[in-house]
Image (cartoon, rainbow, N blue to C red):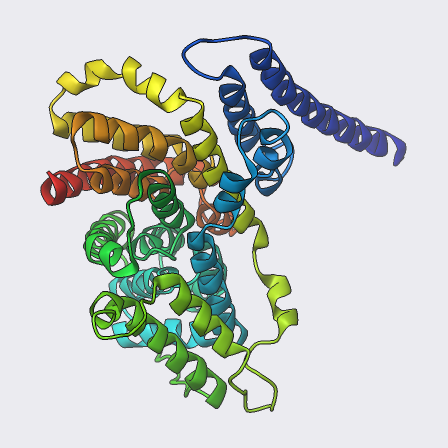
Length: 469
């Protein structure tokens, strides 16, 4: 009786592997076809490599991180990039800034400091439906500013599920549960936009601007622009979810027990607070120091101290074995994106595309920003936001220089847009995580996510135009 089932599973497996093989072959064939053509305006091989990488990033026949190694595997043998720029791309200081942020986040997670912060915020906000929603959104957004939005969503989901289980039975419980799940995904996406280390597109954008346009963006400079955006979007999202999911709910939860920080949590919190203060004050402190420090050196110093400071158990707060939990692949994805940006610039593809986009110069600046933000935001629903930034920032940067519009402003708009994907479970890890709870459907996410997408386009366009134009 089992044979038909086994046969069916084998057929599905063979079909799946066949599709993966087909996508692998298509990507290689695309590069081969472009490699066979000679184009006077630009190097066709570079365009072929870009299309190959984008295709694999979208259909993912191999992991995203493995695709990011193609500039090394293909770039040098086909004379698309030299070893110097290649090393600079994969060893960019922005990558090490993110690495330092990862290690700090690992220390926070190892000693469950993130749970303490979350419970404190939720307990502070209160026990009514509206206050619970606000507490979860504030806690999720705050944590997402400093640790990955994936880790934030993973940590907040079981807390939310336990709250839902404890809610007294009432008619609107299912509706409230949907709103609470979406609040975690949306807040995790929004919260990461406030800091350079909060979400990968921010770091990627800063790295490409530094590498290709010699424009440096520090932690504080990004924060004073992006934090107001984060707050505004969080408030808009809160009132949107409250209107659709909470306005008729009426219950009150019991008091959440107060928890004290233990010694290890206090030490990690103290170190983390010191790092944040150094990031915020670096531009002022450098005026009085004999040597200049940067955000990367601060992050790595904080990470190093985690291996030096003792825990109450006698060992250090972090051991090297703890780093096995680090998402190393993201660092390769950064490097691959910056290497691809360098290849496209050297191959004159970006310059060629700019000449084709000259009609856009005639458009009013606000309309141009609106078009760019809309393309970036809705594209990130279907492809990696990191890959999207890697492709768009070099092009948008050259377009900005050509038109004489603020380079940082338009690039910041793209980076913010790449993090605000609310419609589909596959768009961001937080979306997928809350969808796995089975408390909401794709239809739920698309309906309310599309509304938030449209609001976000208007907010980013207005903010970029008001601040930079």
